[in-house]
Length: 353
Ligand SMILES: [Zn+2]
Image 1: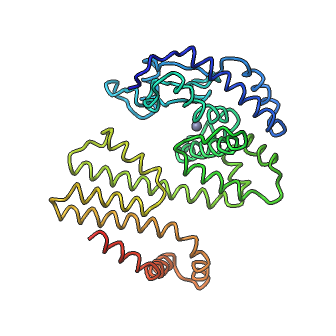
Image 2: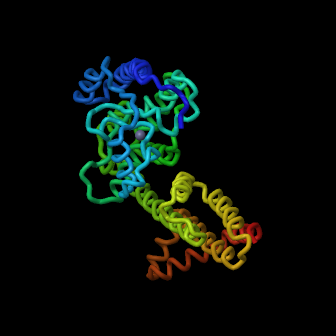
Image 3: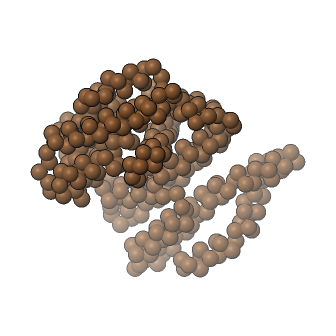
C-alpha cells in the first residue's frame, strides 16, 4: 500500500495544467485530421479540471471488481481498480486517476505521484478521447475483446510517437503486443497516404472499417483470434496444474500468472519458464512431471505450427489444386513442418529431459 499522505488537490491541479498543455499540442499537431466535434471537445476540456484525482470509493471497488468478473461481494477488492481510466468508463467525459492503487506503490512523495502520472498515464488517457475504434454495441464477445485490444494498441502507439516528437520521455505500458498489432495494421494501409490522412482514419474509424482499409486486415484478425485461442489453452493448462496441487482457479496468484503469460509473445520464453515451474512443482513426482511436460510441449509446438502456416500457403494452394482433401493437406504440411524443425524439437527434448 502506498505510504504517502496523498494531497489530491495539489496533484489534480498540477496534472490538469499538464493535461491542458498536451491537449493544445494535440490540437496543433492533428487539427487537420480531427472532426469538428473532436475539436469542440478539446475546446470544452481546455482549462477545465478534466482529470480527476481521487481515492476509489466503495462503489468504485464494487464496479471494477464486477468488471473483472467477481460476483461475490466478499471478494471485491481494491486490486481490481485500475490506476487510471478514460472518459467513457464512468460516462462523464473525464479521466480518473487513482494514486491509491498498487502501481503507485513506489512513489514516496506527492511530486513522485505527479511525475508518474505525467510520465505514463496522462498522454495515453488523452488519446483515448480521439481513438475509439471499439464498437460499443456488439454482442459478439470476441469482437468486443478485439476492439478493446486494438484500441489500446492504437492509443499506446500514438502516445509513444507523440512522446517522442514532444520529448516527453518514454511512456510505459503493458501494451507491447497491442502496439505491434497496431503498427502492422497501419503499415498495410494503401500506399501513398499522407500522415494526416492516416491520422484521420485512426481518429474516425471503427474496428471493422480499420480492418477493411488495411490490406492485411483479414489475416491480422485471423492471427489475433488464433493467438486468443492459444492463450485460452495456456490458461486452462495453468489452471490444471494449479488444481493438481490444490490451488483454486480463482486464486489471485493463478490469475496473475495467467495474465503475465498473456503478455508474452515469445513461445520459447513461455516454454522455458513454464517447464522450469513444472520441474520445480513436480520434482517429487516424475510421472506427473512428464505428463505436464508432454502437454506443454504439444501446446507450444501446435502454436508454432499455427504461426508458421502462412509460410505454407502456396504449398497448401497447390495441394488443393491437385484435389487433396483438407485432412490430407494438413498431415502433409505437418510432416514437412516437422522435418524442417526436427532439429529444434530434438534440442528442446534434450534440454528438458
Ligand atoms: Zn488505455
